[in-house]
Length: 93
Image 1 (spheres, rainbow, N blue to C red):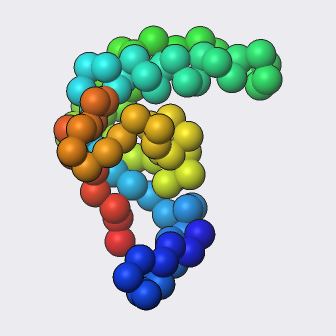
Image 2: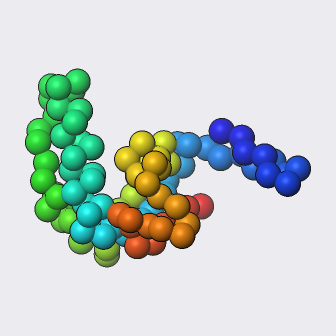
């Protein structure tokens, strides 16, 4: 993905990882997104938000997703001035 701003070009590899910390609503958002895909991927099992909270606990409060997956789950509602579901976002790398 290539972004142009003020005549500067930035290339972002959407397969890179992003680390973030969720608010309570963010864990539920992740569970809801996962469960929406149950009909498409029959091998998936239903998950509750406590599954994602446990993952965050293992990572000292941090969760990690590839950028493209993060954008699918949180991109429409995430802005710098209003992080509804998230506390902190950090691009690895």
